[in-house]
Image (cartoon, rainbow, N blue to C red; front, top):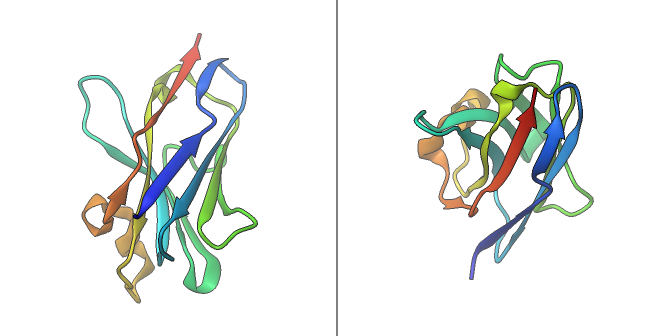
Length: 126
């Protein structure tokens, strides 16, 4: 059974840091990513890691503050979030894709991901 296990959410003050982790089991994925959804808003792309070549993508809104990286295992990624802002408050979802795309930017779209985690809440207080 394919499963994504997320951890690391919580409450932090503005300017603080959190680290999210996502471990996949059941199969190997070509890419893993983080998306987020705030109340009343659309789900948005945050960051992606493509296994082939170790390529990463980050949304403009988090560049320079968030970093996605592969964990020790093949099927695990972390999202290091620094300089957090109140507008980063959202439910963060891990996603994994079995599909291979030569064009790495394709992995910024939610439609390419097959498996989704349950989400972990991140709240940033001002």
